[in-house]
Image 1 (cartoon, one colour):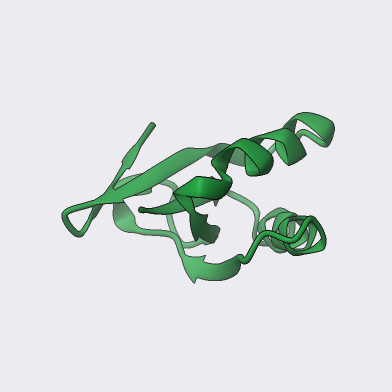
Image 2 (cartoon, one colour):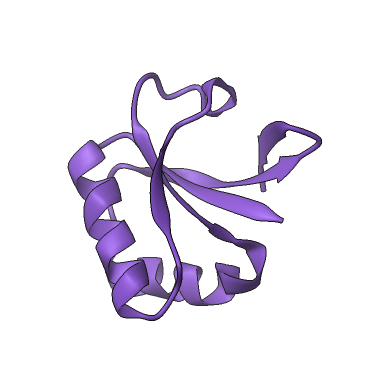
Length: 80
């Protein structure tokens, strides 16, 4: 399933996406869905199988604008 890491800061989202790619995790920038409730922003999109590694990157460098992870189920994203 598709996951996104939601950020309130576009700059931090783009930095996190670069960190994911450097770790070999296929990731891309996507518009944050309205379900996230954070306004207009960018999120990092990746596949659920990479969640453990993506979480590890966040533990190494916490981002102040990180809002949480969301998973896409039946065309809607929900926080996990």
